[in-house]
Image 1 (cartoon, each protein chain N blue to C red):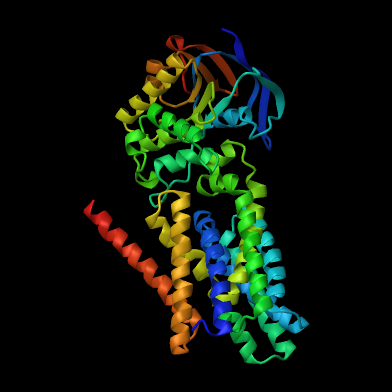
Image 2 (cartoon, chains in turn cyan, blue):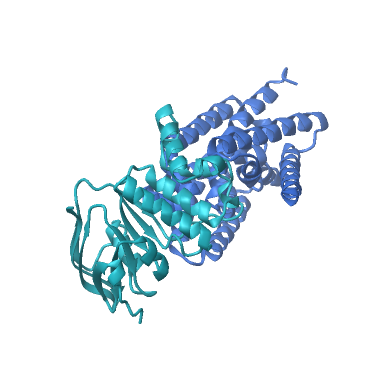
Length: 217
Length: 266
């Protein structure tokens, strides 16, 4: 499998606070990587840099030119009164005038994320797990071949966590999608993810998930 | 009542204003800009007073002030943590200016009343043409940026994650909002223009589940308000603005309580 992301000597400072420095790693096509690390280690910062939402202080990174990225951010502003249905919410990431092709595409992603039956439920009334799957479906509309999820399971109950992880496993195995999954949940990562990228003490280390010996100190 | 030319003009202008405010209102509500819409109406009052002072039509003074106010308030609120306080300060400044302009222009209180409470019955042929043209410009502006505007207004974080240019979309929307405030003020007055910009859309939130259906509900509710308001105003000689206000509030409260009632049984 070829490398699809190459990160070289990446450093990030906010004012005078060093978040990380000289971070180097590569990700392989079709890999399923857990991005682990304690709070404040810079996991979200790293993701935002990779998504071009933030400029690094130093260093470079390069995605393979065939990579199409999908990204599910950590927080959303969906309150209880949020009016749009799950289907309409997912469709925000599509042209306003929905041709048959676009409608079919949205339907396909709703099916893929097990949301077809509840597509008319308002997002504000959907459960945490349903919302996360809707965020994922919205990102999948871009036809990505790599997806980055930031703390997607953080506020979910155990059953919803398993459901989301099985969905990611399915995307990885059936659609060869590369997955980078930011999490705190070590048991969950050990169960579903194959590789890890551990961000701590301002640096990063990489390996197979079963060999992970992070101290989380 | 359509045998009277002024009623025909009033209906035509109100119809376009209601459609425009109904559409723009959807974004005012979803972007949490209700307070800004309110502030802009006060800025519009100052602009109209300024126009009276300068001896030009109030509409142009309103447009000038609301456009300047909208973009600067918008900038302030995206940069500052003190959103509410900075809007309050700006709103105080503009009401003060409005009072000053009216006083030094030496115009009578009837002018002030017209600006604050609206005077759609007095709209002439030129006025109708201006209002319709401005409404169409606002609707075109919204149409041009509808995809990023929809995404950014209903899922700001998701839109940013997809590289939507939120800043540009935001400014275009603020321009459209300023224009809507100026034209909406012509019918319900600057004091109550926020009614048309927030209540129909807030009601539509309970009724629609897509942006399209919410927009249709919002337009319909705005139209019911202005049409019925004009008709009742014609019948009773009471202020049109009063009828529009109570109709919109009644529809909003009715829907709100119906929704509460329905939820308690689910």
